[in-house]
Length: 373
Ligand code: G6P
Image 1 (tube, rainbow, N blue to C red):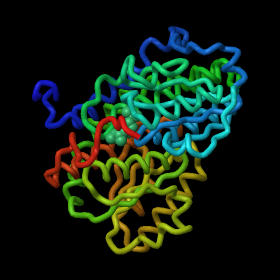
Image 2 (cartoon, rainbow, N blue to C red):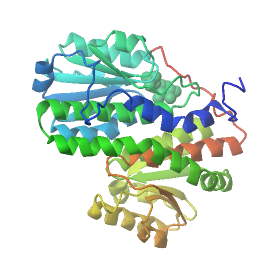
Image 3 (cartoon, protein in one colour):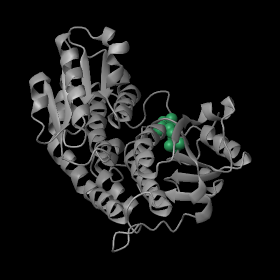
Image 4 (cartoon, helix red, strand yellow):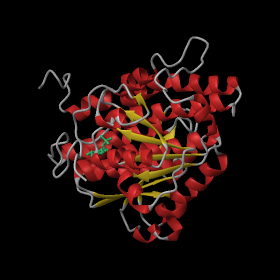
């Protein structure tokens, strides 16, 4: 087993470090030399894909957060409405699904029963289904019209890390492919986005190289916290929810991810002296107004005694004034940021659980793949 962990103390640690490769491998072979996107596995008629009027992403757990990140990108690039729904809710609410609906089922294992049942339901209603999956030949891709595989390699730790990053990347490839097909974006714009995507593996590597020790220290200092709140906005919102999920799963700490804009509508009542709040700050270059709004959220919780840990992009000095601590990640575009900001949150949950003496690979009560409804 030690050899399988590649010298790391746990599979989770190894898998977090596999992420640059997982992202690179998921991109591999899908971009040709002049930057055009080719998805050979897209076995759905192009004319059908051109007439799609709605996309519904179905997934569970971490995969559903990957879908929520992708919603922002796909809607922006394709101008097609995207709904993200937990697979177990989808089937039971009489969803509006037609032949013009494209369902994207995201699943690392490809065996999650809730997601499988939702795929069957969608196909019965006449929708086309694309599976985004990490396990070749598993049930969900077999039962779908097409499969786009994430090439993250086997994920052994129960809580998902590298599969998440790869799922976001695969969804982005799908979104750009649809944009290319539907002619919503100029070719050079898609090329620029793809170029940025190709820089992500080395940027993830630099997060691992530069932030790990700082996050480890932070986790050790906070191993006795009773609850942690995560705030984010835009794509940072699903990142906040994923950060909270990792902490629940690995460290058994009560954690919630909130949309930062929602703070004043309720969650701010939770802020008390010493409450740890982790805030994912959007890039100032990308969305100036959002950056300012999230900074004021940091101020608001700080004024009420919160311990504010901020994830921000390199060069963002404005956040320092209100932050107890800043964890910097490399600069990238707004939509690519989740591929970087998620990583310190994964490390935080893993290191905090480790500091508490917990088994990060096999958390209590959880299964890697839930094959019952
Ligand atoms: C389980 C795992 C989670 C995972 C979810 C969905 O609950 O513990 O880590 O995100 O299933 O799994 P899937 O294989 O469908 O992505």
